[in-house]
Amino acid sequence: MANPLQLSIVNFTQSSYIIVEGKQDANCFFIIRSGQVRLFKEAELVEEEKGVVLGPGDFFGVVSTMSSHS
Image (cartoon, helix red, strand yellow):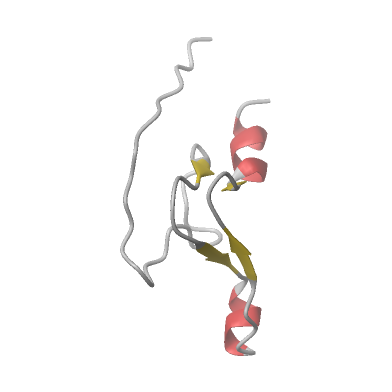
């Protein structure tokens, strides 16, 4: 049952997509070190909603990560 966890620092450019719902590997968990990340669903994007803004110390990807390591 070896399932090693790996920690990597990844930088993203402004306005790039980090996760696209339904297309991302379930093994990802992100902790924001600096800058901001805006979370929104595609329906909200079409409606031009601002979404949720996360900053340093916040994290996302929990649901998909936990479901693959139960």
